[in-house]
Length: 218
Picture (cartoon, one colour):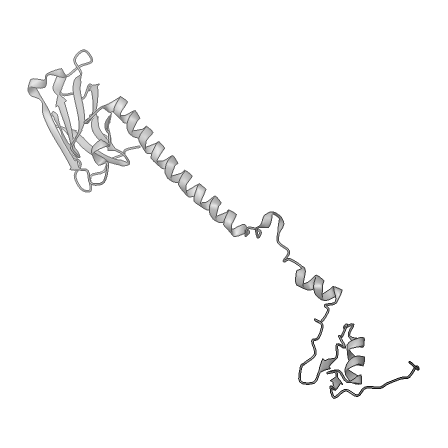
């Protein structure tokens, strides 16, 4: 057959959704557009926008954390821990000190707290037969028992005040003897912790100090 060219007319219209201005804008923004032709009535498919290298780096970058994965501790936390340790140490030290003091008093004075003395006070006694004194803390009540010249059949009892406060039933009572009013007779001084009571030696016995009576303890 002889060669010839035939042209066929198609009623299908091909169109794109990109204008010339859109193509230039996509080229400037580093896009790779797709110019897939569309059949009339069917939208063309666009390629996905390509992200730049800088955008990918920002999106994939992980937050920077401190070494060890934890935030640094504030210095006030260490100060608070130090204060807490010092407070607990002081409490423990106080408890140990009190326990040791009570233990020593138990060794020296027993329970109830008792102290004994042999002293010449001029109550028919002598160096060979001194008077015997027993100082007691009997359920918070201070009592001093005197056996003149060691004879307890003639015992005299001197009653002191009642101690008030926690643990006062374990407070030791001690005695000392000194002429505090200058009359030449040995007087009796009763000591309980930081308190001192004076009994004046008069008429073969001891009496409590009167209000306004001049004495010299030092």
